Amino acid sequence: MRQDERHVPIWDVPVRLFHWLVVVLVATQFLTAEFDAWELHKLSGYCVLALVLFRIVWGFAGTSTARFATFVRGPAAIRAYARSFWSRTAEHAVGHNPMGALSVVGMLTLLLAQAGTGLFAMDTDTGLVSGPLAHLVGDDTAFKFTAVHEFLSGIVQILIGLHVLMILYYAIRKRENLIMPMIVGTKRLAAHVQAPPMNAYAIRALLVAAAIAIFVVLLVTRL
Image 1 (cartoon, rainbow, N blue to C red):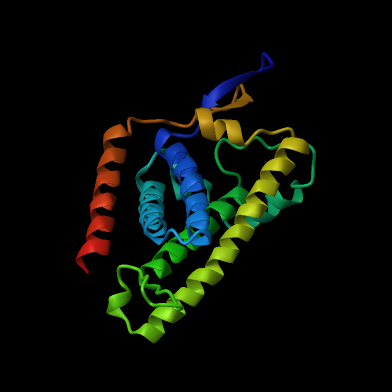
Image 2: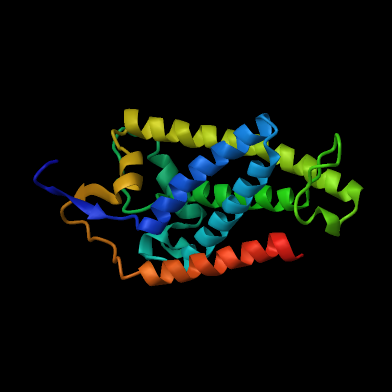
């Protein structure tokens, strides 16, 4: 690290836990679907739903870099950033850059839709495996949810592939490591860059997580 640089905390623990738990759980989703381990598939799906709901709430109640208002930008900012996208010079954003924000919002939306359709889905071959809310709709509707669920699975894989390609592009072309900050929480930035405020958040995060866990449990067991 150069003398004019320092490590700045940018990602709080909840954001980092969310990211890596989603990686593990989405991989579990694909594997369990491939090997017909449907009970584990459903359980991991409930966990994905809970995590996505947590991240959405944390996008309004979390620390500064976790909040949507901090990193979601309009078309003008996205176009301005896109013009420098192919440059070798990295714009070391404190949090998500404008294009990265599109990936975050897109992935959250997609995973929410994927988990939501899974709640109403039903095995089209035997009808013996179904989501916890499939009984609220007719079989024909449940089969339609299943079709959408399977279609979205392919879109998730495409978006994951693009995400990995962008990480590699930034590492090779711009010499910017995007993975390590999401592990340790800090990023190497110019010394003059002001560190984002990281106010105490542990109790707030636990309360949000507990509320969402209760909601998801009630959703899949009581309806």
